[in-house]
Length: 175
Image 1 (cartoon, rainbow, N blue to C red):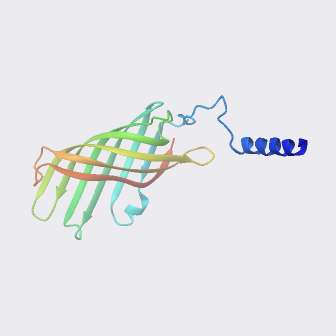
Image 2: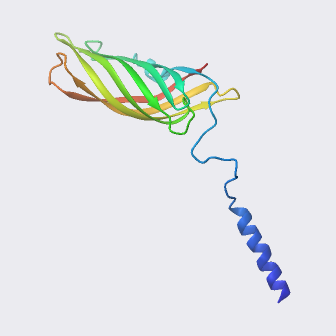
Image 3: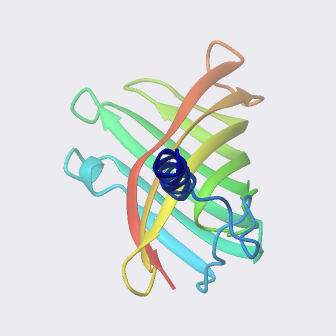
C-alpha cells in the first residue's frame, strides 16, 4: 500500500509540474515596454508592382502612438490612380506601444483619377493590427493590419464610399 501511495504522489507532483502557474511578478496583460520611440515602414512587395504604402509612427505614451500614412497606386497602365494621405492614432492595450495588438482611428484625404475625371474626398476610418519588433535590439519592425475608411465630402462620384485599408506586411525600422 505504501508503494502505491508513493507512486501516486510522484505522478501528482509530475502533473502539477507539467502545468506551471503564473509567477507572482508577471502581469498577464502587459508586454515588455519598447525602448524605441518611432517606426518608419513600407511594404517592399507592393513596390515591385509600383504601388506604394508607407507609414511613420511615433510613440506618445506607453499605450498610444500618432502617425501618418501614405498610399499610392495606379492601374490600367497608369490611366487610373488612387492616392491617400492619412493621420492616425493607435492604442496598444498591452502597454507596449509600437509592439503587439493595436486598435486605431484615421482621418485623411483621398484622390482618385482616371482618363477624363478626377475627384477628392475626406475619409474617416478604423483599423486593427498587430506588429512585432524583432532582433537583439528589437528594432526590426513587421506590421500587419486591416480596416475600413468611409469617404465623405468632396467630389468623388458615387457619394459616400467605403474603401478597405490594408497594412499587409509592412517592414521597417524602429529608432
